[in-house]
Length: 155
Image (cartoon, rainbow, N blue to C red; front, side):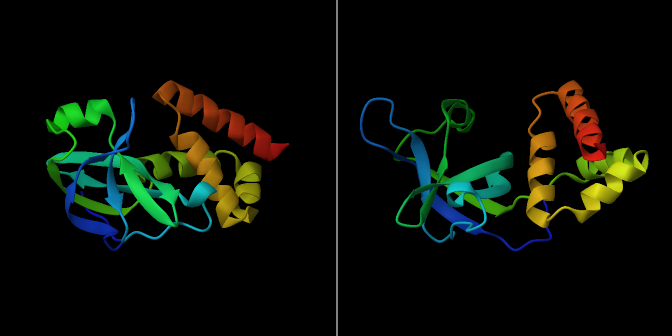
């Protein structure tokens, strides 16, 4: 995975677990600052953990301005790791995939009124719109969301 952005964090990290039954497994990342523009200070990232690609993840706040990367059971199973094990991690700031952005631009070219309105949105509003589109669980849902967003912009 290549990013034009600088690395957020890179190194070896020990998998930790919050206390109590059902406690989350996570990597503590004190060197990554919270995002003051994002909800709860979350930081969106992408990268690799050991040999696995993380195309999109969120670093979550744990209090005191500190962040952690949650490691769900499915990811830990793929890694073959548990609390106390070490992993190699490299994270970059998240960037939308180029093919996704090209598809959205093609949609805007076919809807010039919506494109003009989208261009006038603030960067934060544009990012929230792209997040909404990108978060669709299937390609069919993403297309449906694009159509709905274009209609909404043209109102």
